[in-house]
Amino acid sequence: MKYLGFVVGCAATGAAADVPNVAVDIAPVHSIVSAVMGDLGTPDLVIPAGASPHEHSLRPSEARALDQADVVVWMGHSLTPWLESPVETLAGDAAVVELLDHPQTLLLDVRKGATFGAHDHGHDDHDDHDDEEHADDHDDHDEEHEHDDHADHDDHGDEEHADADDHDGHGDEEHADAHDHDDHDEHGEEKHADAHDDAHDDEEHADAHDHDAHEGADPHAWLDPNNAIIWAGAIAQLLAEQDPENAETYTANAQAFQADIEALKGEVAATLDPIKGRSFVVFHDAYHYFEDRFGIEAAGAMSASDAVSPSAGRVAELRETIAELEAVCALTEPQYNPGIVDAIGTTELGEIDPLGVGLDLGAGLYRDLLSNMASSLYDCLTPPT
Image (spheres, rainbow, N blue to C red):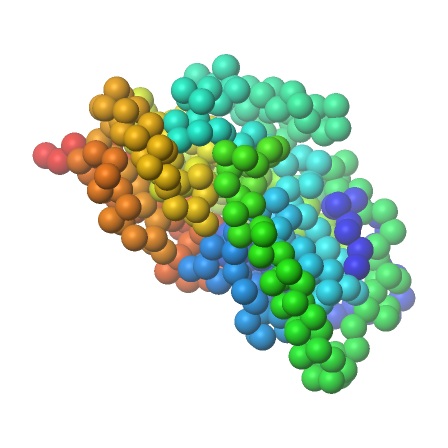
């Protein structure tokens, strides 16, 4: 298995390469990769949109997708620690990239507590939320990553991402012997069994995403559309190296996606502008990137993660904050019981979805996801007439 880290190198040489088999972890990443691949192919989704990425047991078909992958694109172990062992076991010959490790990914810290430490996001200068300020707020990453220019994607060609995506030495030569798919029937089940053993050995990770205890970057980075723009260009370059005959198509598809998401940013901002300053709470703290990008702010989260039920102490802290801020809106998620919000004292109940549950898989899911999130917030926070 080759962890590539999105370093651009020499294009593959020799015999013409086939369109690579690509496996991805979550539906929003599937959408970005689908947009880049276009009509050339469709990535395989490993974690269904209705499942929690923090804890999921692989089905045989999902394990098979990893086993047959030439490329695996996933958020990374901080979102899905249980997936690391199956990726290593089943996708041992694949090129593996973690989007959270991309040097241009815009990262935010995990927020602490039911009310996020009295709403201190560590971003003092985000009143205007312009892209340059957003890049400046990532001082912790500046020494390793120069990403000030990536917050303004006025030109989204391959040249914009070339410096960030220097893929040294992972062309077709590295994949010449990557996969003999005729052998999959013979060894797939054995490897699947091994992967499940590894996954069940990691049961202690079921609570690993109690974000009160978790240190480091918030893993929900796909909810900043600037990250999707960055990743699309990087994925296009990666796929072009694996499949140089279709390099121009990957590049053109990525540029079209980037332009569409730039337009979407304006649409979402326009939807959210009338509700800025109104307080709301969410089921779990998955929305920091979305809030930060568009200048809104949750008052708190009912649960530390989608894998952990809220404690009595957390509910009490959140009730006090809701009373102080006069928050009227609580947003649950599709796969969780809305009855959980009864104890916290808001008057309006809405639903917000960070993963695309119920949306059609494909290139359009990412746009629909962010547009629906904005509409959910607007509907919940707009007083009835």
